[in-house]
Structure formats: structure tokens, C-alpha cells
Figure 1 (cartoon, rainbow, N blue to C red):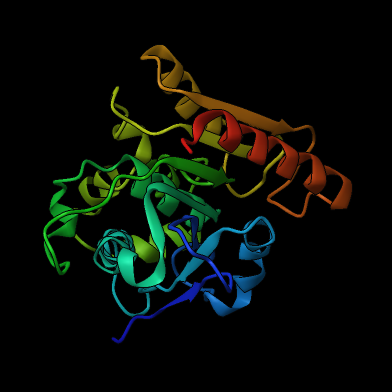
Figure 2 (figure 1 turned 120 degrees about the vertical axis):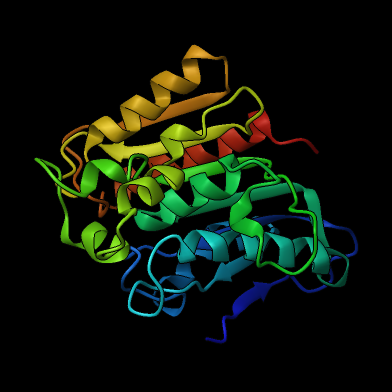
Length: 247
């Protein structure tokens, strides 16, 4: 499968720019970068560069393919930063739902992760911050039991080691002291991704001193928080980035 990404660079830029990298949602089994292209606009309006990434969905390749593609997208950014004026010291990754999960993976996986084995190049640039919207943090939790979801079951398929694969791509298992600042946005009444996923990640990061923030939307569902709440959230996002992004 031929994978592509879209690069947006403001005209007239004469120095490397902070860059926003976005991964679409859809439970790893549906969606496209074209459907969520507007997600880059708040960053473009502030003079950032932006990159909107396509990755393999479950109907093309089961887990962990999407995570492998995210690592490869970062390698691509590193290999092409000079061409597009990208500041590798100011890479911010983000996404909604499954895209939130992928943004956490992009920021939290170790640079030498085996999930980058098929990617061109040998070095994965370090992410400077993660903005996680309603992202899954524990994939194993969604495979069976009270929180089972068809999309997660479809992404892992009937692979005999599906639980081991799910654990390998669950951000709650990536928590170490050497991580970028992480902002998580989630409603406490989310019917699709359990709010406990956000709380658990926040508590684990807090316990080892990783800079992070959990912004809770009271009675918020799975996104669609409304215009007023959305404006508040973007104030929180850009304040978090101003406080934690160099330059």
C-alpha cells in the first residue's frame, strides 16, 4: 500500500518552524487524513507548519501496522526536515481517539523501538510534546470484558498473540521518566474510550514526575464538545505548549 502525508508550510517562512503532526481517528479501522484535515488549522493560523498523516487501517493490515506507520512518519519528518523548514526540536504530535492513541505512541515509544524496524533511515526524531484527544491508552482493556469494543477486536483480529501485541502498543506500558510533556483531553462521560484510560495514564505519569496535564470535560462524551468548550480547550492547549515547548 502506498502511504502519503500532507505537508502544510506557511508562505514566506525563513526559519525552521514548530510543526504539528496529526493522526486521524476511526478506531484504527476507518477514517482518513482527508476527513480530518481541518484539525491542522489552529496551528497554521499561528504560523506553524503542519503534517497530516495517513496510516494503514485494519482492513489492510492488522495491529501493530498503524503504530509502525506512525514511527515511519516520524522518520520521514526527520529525513525531510530541512526541505520543508521543520524544526525538529519543536515537533508536536496529536490526534483524536485512535489518533490520540497513535500520538501517544509517537511520543512515548523508545527511539530504538522494534516497531520502527521497517522504516527508512535509522533515527527517529524525538517528539517535543503530545496533545492527546480522547485517546486509548490500554488496548488490552478493549479486547474483552466490560470495555470490549468491536473496533479494537477488528484491529487485532484473530492473531494468536493478540493480547501480547495489544500490550506492546498500549501507552500505559510506555511510561518512563524520559518522556515529552503530555496533555490529555477527555470527557468524563465518554461512552467509547473509558475515562479511566486518561486517569490511569495521568496518575502513572505523575508518579514518576513526567510533565503532564489531564483536562477533563465535565459530562463530555467522545468528542463533539461544542464551540464554547472547544475554545477553552485550545486556550489550554496553547498555554500548555507555551509553558513546555522551547523556542
